[in-house]
Image (cartoon, rainbow, N blue to C red; front, side, top):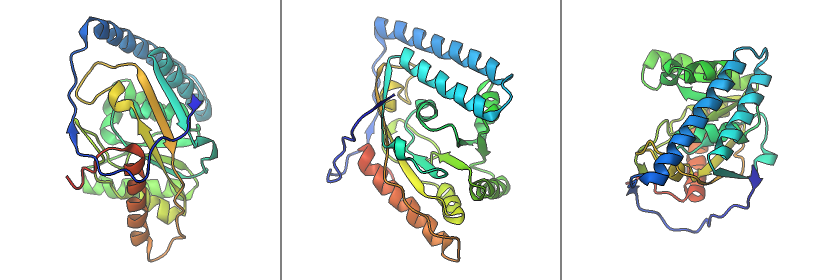
Length: 265
């Protein structure tokens, strides 16, 4: 992973939402796609086999980080990072979500002390669910009210205990490029646990693996850690502070990502 200087202008004007139009892969793209999925699958299966026998979570996360870097490199997806060397720990990382590649990319570049917060549906996906459980992922329910409350309490306990967490606060992504509304959970946990929030901008994954296509493409991916947003100590104003953290993080990511604001479209 190579460092790169950020390339976004904070004065840029609003960008209009655009529905992703993905051309057919063609013969060369088809061959590349088959090769990419084959090597991703092979590395994934080998990684999972080792995860089942490695005794500690630290070793399992280090292995998965190495595997993610290898898979991306073999796929011709060049990842450049900026600002992660000064990432505060523990902290709450919040990143934009544009592709299924986002989790793989963050796993490749973030320190191994971070736990990913993932929608509960992923826990039932064959192989992926088992891999995520072995890595200590935190599963949350986006729909059910009772599960949602218990999940929020569990994440708060993790944050108070000093566990670094990674969220995709949009919760999902779609074929239209742009930033969706942010759920409040990540920011509530940060405010109550007095942990800084670090917005992380991911650029290029939408092109490398578009939401509307099964066919990956080689290309450059950039990951940029923005300025940390400090949280205040717990108190009666926690709800307001969580909303303020959410709004600040989202505004910073809108500028850094350079995609439309779908909450206003």
